[in-house]
Image (cartoon, rainbow, N blue to C red; front, side, top):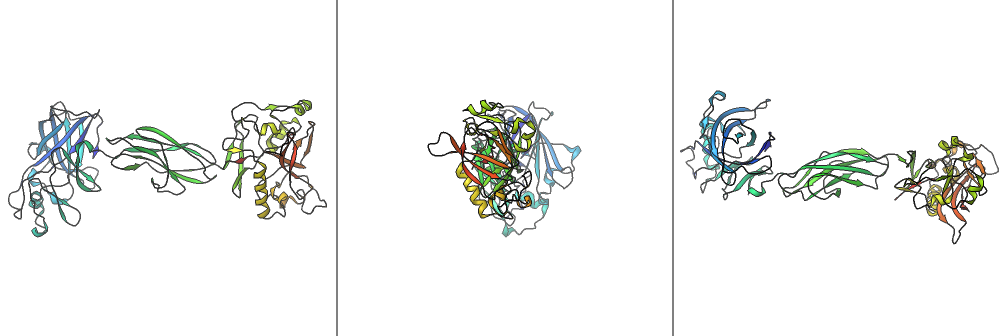
Length: 510
């Protein structure tokens, strides 16, 4: 049923009632049909015991922009204590200026007809309710009178009681038996069905909104339930997946019940991948879905300072391609920028600096951090990421060792193709020897140098070292790191004093 007015709402009940029919169905032809409608206002309150003005029209869609009106009439009638309006189609005052047929001349056999109703709650002709509904059935005698006896009488079932109706299912005529008072005849799956008036509800309405925040591994998705269809929404949520045409049999996140806006955070997504979402809502009638929306996760990650980092997936791990540059912990607290050597050496809390305290080195090489910043509880890495443990460095090295690609060894597979000091040493295929063979892994390790435990700076363009969160057993001085040198063909996985300044690479959370 389609409502096209916002001031009042109308629950439409169409009942075609006529006397028992038999094989002599072409004899007495009824000239009227009983019509009922429950009238409600915009607050869904019944309009009871009130005289109202009614305008009825019988129409048929013709394929044009406007429907064709075959018949129309006016009534003045009253609702009962339950808001039920009862009158007879064909029994009102015909409105002749707009039609050329009488009620008995309507060609019922020419297709589907609709009844259009307009109501003036004040009893006049200022109609403010406007709705229409398909006539589910008409007395066969009416159909036969104008359509002709195109169906043999033997194929038409005989009625057995007052109120029996015929319904054409596409192949055969089916009898719809009358129901008890107060029941409503509605379509379910295209089949006329009697239901309780109290349960005469529709599906909810729900909209899928465009995701508001999309990261490399997550998205905040939103839905909006605008109407419950007359019955409570018992579940609402978001369906999601890597393929379209979603339903609740796919992955879903339940977001409670009821009307209004809601959101769901979808996590553990694959970076740079396309996903589909669809909001849904369920009431006693069934589940309805909003439009399907596609989005693509990012290939980058952003820290609290707004610095953006490219990423690469190596095996089952996803790493930043750039060294960390943040000057703040994830909670917004500033990481101390220590430039003076003595203060750096004596620090036992988190600190950071640029190589040679020169801001020009920040963009390419990132910050140098002491180990205390790496393990600070306020967290150095962006949300969803962390500084790797020694075991995670080992996993990376093992994977690269088994998947070297065009690089002859692990060190060259991890080292970037640029910025390394070129050299030819006794080590075959050293990192600095023929840079074109470097970086088959995509890790892009740069020679960012380091700050020593005396506060001095050392080995820019010749070495790169990256902290882990792990310490050696019962060692209050040293922590593990992974390192590369320009003049060797092997990597370093060892421990050094925590007060040294090394680079940081972050790895995505599992």
